[in-house]
Image 1 (cartoon, rainbow, N blue to C red):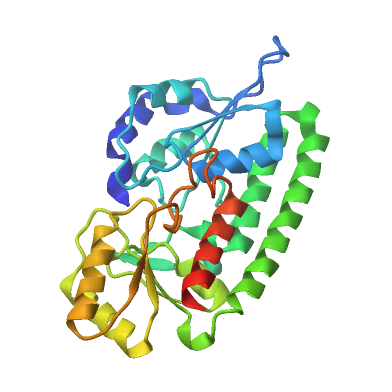
Image 2: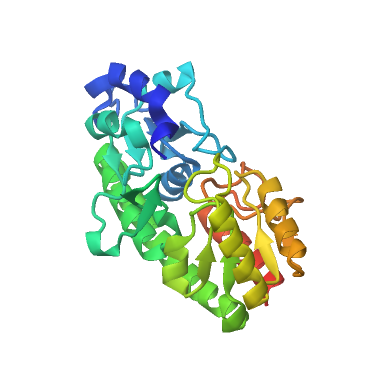
Length: 308
């Protein structure tokens, strides 16, 4: 995860404190303040809370793999023009974090440490940044973003607070819906096999056993030991399906399927035609899963369809 942002880190260091959470431009009330965010998750979050009161720009376009994203010159302009910068934190932005701490706000800043999970990244234990698969933590992020938007737009405070209350209610309803849907999958078949480690918060929140032979990185090869262990698990537990992700190479799941078949087992690879899981990005606007809530529903529908 650390190498995601190496190039952009240098760009951001040039920005420094120029994008501190500056107040909206009150000299021209017709100009909407720019809010720059790092990912599609945060872009959707800001839209849910502030609606059309702001112009939202993200550094990583929806549908792109943040692990492989290469910064563009236009990213510097987005940051320089921003009245508010929001980012994930938890080192999801890697080497960019130092500069972001000077120019923006981490939506994860209020997270209780005892609710965070860890990952092994190249032999180093790091905080798992994929908090959005824990709806309780996502709600805390929403509340932090809401407070920052109210500071930016005090004249819109009532609207933002009302939107926040409504959105938090929708997230509670989503949580209840997820639990009801997952109950349709027999406990003995609740095994989620995905390429990389993005679903650990989901695993803990909903009691689904998650395994990712590729580890935390989306551009690494699957470790032979991890491959063998996963193959044995699929066969022993009679796992029906394994899932590709929208931002990973599905051929690695095909290799896993071939390894299962070589040992006399069988498994389906869920991929293609919009049937990949969404993990590190929402879908591009207009496609299924282009908001946080629709992303989660898309994923759960796939799991229930292929695992029950």
